[in-house]
Length: 150
Image (cartoon, rainbow, N blue to C red; front, side, top):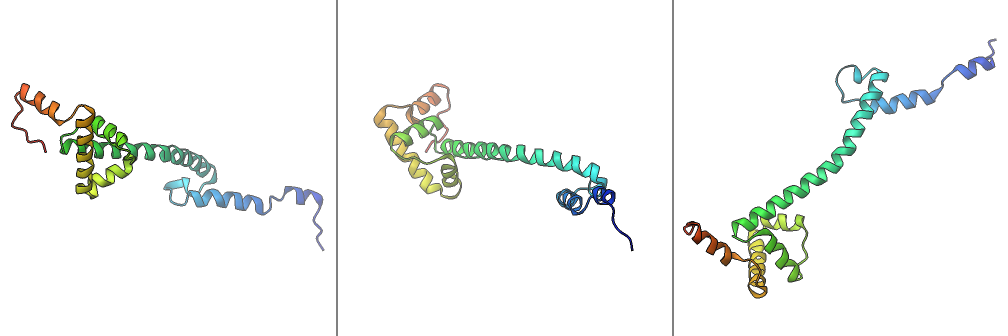
């Protein structure tokens, strides 16, 4: 009969090491090369990948915000209204839409976006903000009168 001594119980690593390594290997399962199978390499690569994932989540939000701004600016340019005037007049008209909603309207609902542009144009005319008329006057000064603005 073999009895386990206290020394062997202390030295045995037990199931904790298995599950700790398994957690790392599950995160590195899609890696290439030894970073997938070798624990010491896998742990470095997993930590680096998690750090990049954290940065990537913030960068994704910034990229989407920039895309929405670009789409709204392009929609305003299509109808010949400055972006700042468009935003200011929407706020003064109590139309509180964020960039994402305005971008979705500009892409998927062009008639609705055109209606918002008309509302902001009318508000600009009432409030005396820079409007299409000032831009068309500048275009005539610079000889760009043949450009059609809606």
